[in-house]
Amino acid sequence: MTTTSLSAQPGLGVRRRWTVLAVCALSMFLVGLDTTIVNVGLPAIGEGLGVGTRGLAWVVDAYTVVLAALLITSGAMADRFGRRRVFRIGLVVFAAASLVCAVAPSLGVLIAARAVQGVGASMLSPVALAIVVSTMTDPRERARAIGIWASVFGLSMAVGPVTGGALVEALGWRSVFWINAPVVVAALVLVAVFVPESHGQRTRRPDLPGQVLLVLALGASVWMLIEGPRIGWSSLVAAAGYALVAVTTAAFVRVETRRSEPLMDLGLFRRPAFTTAVLGAVAVFIALSTALLLNTLYLQHARGWTPFAAGLAALPMALGATLCAPWAGSLVGRLGPRRPLLLAGAFTAAGGLCLAGLGQDTDIRLLLTSQLLLGIGFGFANAPLTNAAISGLPASRTGVAGALTSTARQVGSAVGVAVAGALVAGVEADGLARAARPGWLLVAACGLFLLGVARVAAPVRREA
Image (cartoon, rainbow, N blue to C red; front, top):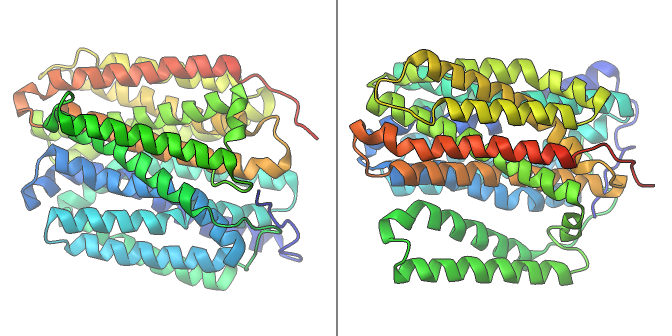
C-alpha cells in the first residue's frame, strides 16, 4: 500500500507547518460544508426548478456518492503525480462545477454538476490529509494536527445548514454554490505560496476494474433507496436493481481479493475492531444526514419556516459538535476510544428518540434539544472512530484504513439522504411529521449501534 514520505519537507519552520495545516483545513472545511449546506436550500431549489423530494435527494447524493467512490483513487493519484498538484486540480474542478451548479437551468444539469463537484472534492479530502501528515513529521505535533483536522471537518458538517439558510434567505438558493468561488480562489493562492510538493515513497498501480465496480455498486444501491418507493419494491425494475447491486458487489469483492494492489484492502475487515469502526462511521453519518434532511423539510414545509430560521434551528447541533469534537480527541488520547464512543451513542440515540413521536405542533424546545443532543453525539464520534479503525495496525496500513473510514462517512451520508428522501417523497405538508417518524427511529438505532461499537473499541497494542 502507499506510504507517506515523512522526509519530504525538511526545514519547514513551525509557523510554516501550521500554516500548511490551516490551508488544508480550509479546503477540508469547504468539502464538509458542501455536503450539508445544500440541505437547507432544497425546498427553494425544488420550487425554483419545479422538482419534488425524490429529485432533490439526487442533488445531495450525486455529490456524496461520487465523493465516496473516488476518495481512495484520488489519494493514490496524488501520491503518484504530486499531492499539491492534484490538490490544486481538485480545487479548480470543484470551483468550476460550483459555478455550473449556480447557473444550472434544470435539475439534470444541477445533478450532473454536483457529481463533478464530488470528483473535485475527492481530490481535496485525502490529499490534504496526506499533505498535513507529510509536513508534520513529529508524532506529537502530527497527533495535534489530526485532532484539529477532525474538529474542522465536524464543524463544517454542522454549520452547513446555518450558513445555507442565511445565504438562501438573503440571496436565493444559487448563492450556496456561488459562495464556493471566492473560497477556492483564496485557497489556490495560499496553496501556491505555502504548501510544498510531496509524493508517496511507493505508489500503487491503478485498479480500474475495482474503481468501476465500486461506482456501480454504490450508485445502484443509492438509486434503489431513492427510487424504490416510486418504482415499487416488488416490481421487475426493482428486481433488476437488486440483481445489479448483488452482482456488482460480489464482483467487486472477487476482483479486490485477487489483486496484488487492490483499490480496497479487504483484509482489514477481518479485524473486528476495524470493521465495527467503519460501520460506526457509516451509522454516524446516516444519523446526521437523515436528521438534517428531515429537519429541513419538516420546518420549511410543515411548519412554514423560512430557510434562515430553519438554518438557525441547526445552531444547537453546530454548538454541540464544535464543543465536543476537541474534547473527544482529548479523551481518546487519555482513555482510548471506548468512553467517547459510549457518549456518542447515548447522545445520538437520545436525540433520535426525542422526535420519534414528531407531530405537526411539536414543541420547538424539544426539537432544539434533539439537535443539541445529536450535535454532541456527532462531536464525540469522529475522533474515537478514526482511532478505533487504526488501532493495532502497522504504520504501513493506517493510511488506507483512514481512507476507508472517510469513504464510509460519505456512504453513510448518501444512504441517510436516500432513506430520508424516500420516507417523505410525495407526502403532503400536513403528513410530513408522521412520515418522518421512522427516520427519527433510524437515527436512534444508529446511536444504539455506536454503543455496540464501543464494546469492541478497547485499546489494543500496535503491531510492529
